[in-house]
Length: 215
Image (cartoon, rainbow, N blue to C red):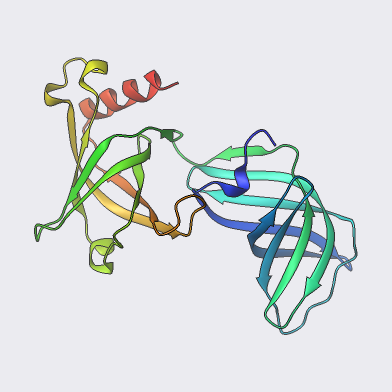
């Protein structure tokens, strides 16, 4: 694969789609294991499960925070236990991408802080950045209280790459979007996404120019 999409930290949901006995099946699955030849996806065992045929055409739809990746695969085999169904699928060779964001995210490490009305502050380093928001990893779980209210985000941009942006800091209202735990290579940490609310036009221009420089 050109890019290991199935291990992307931004994945929100994976669908395995196939046709069995004339009916289209669309199962929500999670990646369990992958090597150079096949990958295995797990799903809870339904009350009634009709085992599909081996080596039939299938499709993977991988939803991420940036968009949807789609690919054609072969459903090689299916194994069922009392707790889960394990789907053995061929390794995807290429992906089609449908972007859902106004702009894609760029991987970049920048100091960021989010301060809430009661004074509580989250300090972190960005994992990636877009015109719409940021994401980062944190070892300290975020309380449900701060997932429901907005805060003030301060992002420190590199001064040497900016013109007419005093102090190199952008301040904007922000709100929690989603989180994900047990991301590969970041065990013990939580991957968190926050969105920007009401970025002023001048700051948006500065941010857009900075993202262009990252290409």
